[in-house]
Amino acid sequence: MSMEVDHLVVAANTLEEGRAWCEQVLGVAPQPGGRHALMGTHNVLLNISAANYPRCYLEIIAIDPEAPPPGRARWFDLDQPAVRERLKEGPALLHWVARVPNLDAALAYWLGEGVDAGQPIEGSRGDLSWRLALREDGRRLRKEGLPTPIEWQGDAHPTDKLPDSGVQLLTFEARDGLSATLSTPKGEVELQAIEATLA
Image 1 (cartoon, one colour):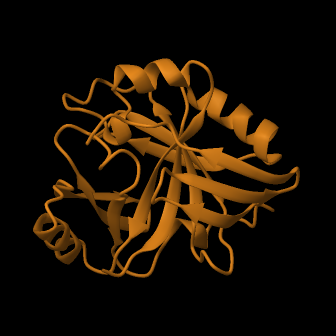
Image 2: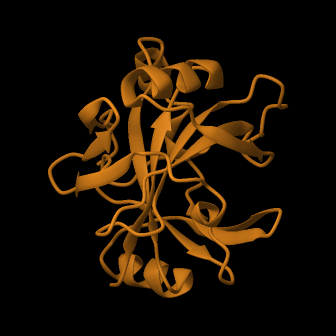
Image 3: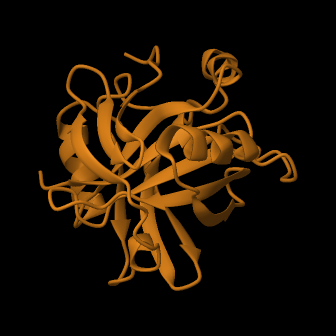
């Protein structure tokens, strides 16, 4: 099945902590993102595109304290007590999202492999529109190894309007635990994901 790294998800206890982490650890300031009304979260973004990882960005996400409770489990395990406790220590790599050409085909393929990646939901912001798979329980798949699949609608992508950040994704590994190495103004930075307990 064809898929590419679309974005890495770094979670933070608060978005302010996420911004500070980005500046301290990666040496650059993230760009404004937006709010996710369905999930009660908000984010900031950083372009980390590289030759081997085109149209790739870093999403720093946190629960939006001004948003009403979503009435469902938030995505990426953000409601899990172990994750909430870990984020009190500081932001960390949590998950990754993979770009697929056909979300329905990807979900059908995974279902045939015994993996329930959830149901498609639609989202939009400005000229961006997308379809993304979401499980009812909000959980990541098989710990953090398998991504959340996303299908962008049309040609617009967040990296089109994100300036060059001076940060690039050098290496990415998801088979034996999620990790990524970034080239930054502060040198190479390795990120290791928070583990989940989902089998």
